[in-house]
Length: 184
Image (cartoon, rainbow, N blue to C red; front, side, top):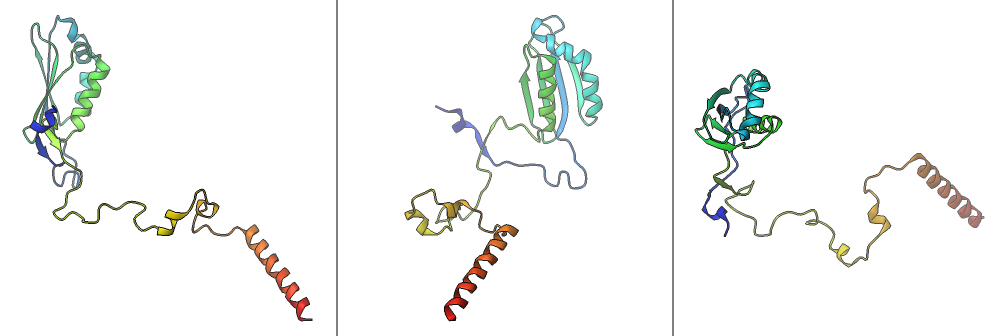
């Protein structure tokens, strides 16, 4: 049985008016928990030594805390402005992957782990006729045609080339000559 039945249903939401005047990053605080001796924290320790200062300079709106713990696996704890908290185990992750996950947490608006997302669109009055498709307003006679058809393969509003216009003028001129000979 799926766990989706037990998650709270929610619509996709974003903080209102964020980015209208200026963008406010929604990640408030990051706590990096690691062990000084444990081998599974090697990637976290390498990231702290080499990449943490650059991450903090690039994201001045995010407060970064370091919390060493003995004999525990490394964890990233992210806290957002709306009060959501997200925990992520980074056991045996290299430092590049930890930077990718921190970047993802920084760009998210909130934690979506405990929500079952509904459809992206919602309406109080759904259509009785069904959703629109590209074939909704097509000519019904196309249902009886055997494909491929050269006429339908061409674009509808393609302008004539100069060569086609000259050929058309030549054909008209030939027709006029034939009609003038018949009239005589």
